[in-house]
Image (tube, rainbow, N blue to C red; front, side, top):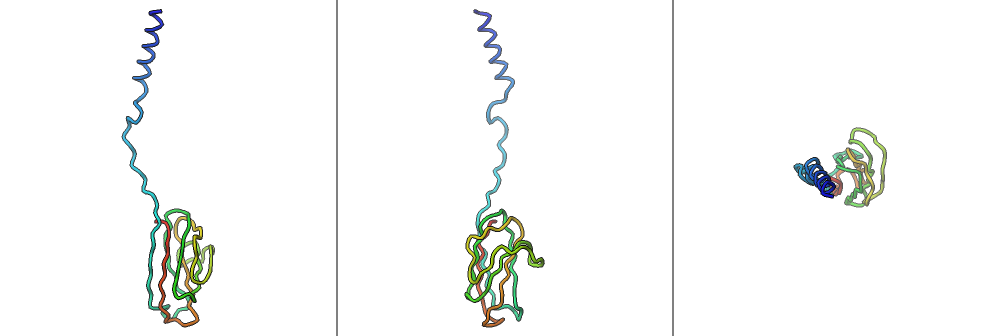
Length: 129
């Protein structure tokens, strides 16, 4: 009986010395969480062009919300930077609400309103940063 107790005690001691204590390693750095941010662009017009483009980088795939005034401006949300056509994700006048956009480069094309190229506009894009 004494021999069995000694064997158990030796086994427990061996296990304690062999395996490191839970949490003994140094803690890893927390990864920064993506948060939604809002970018506001104010412009005095399209500068004679029929369209203008605004790029943004989505930190992760997720919902993007876009609003523009005046409501006569047509919005087209696409993947990739402004200088590439990209896949169209959504299009509508005035606003796009909670459109799922991929992580990485995306862009928004604004079409010149019927009022003309000198129409001032305000653009608000909420995306992941």
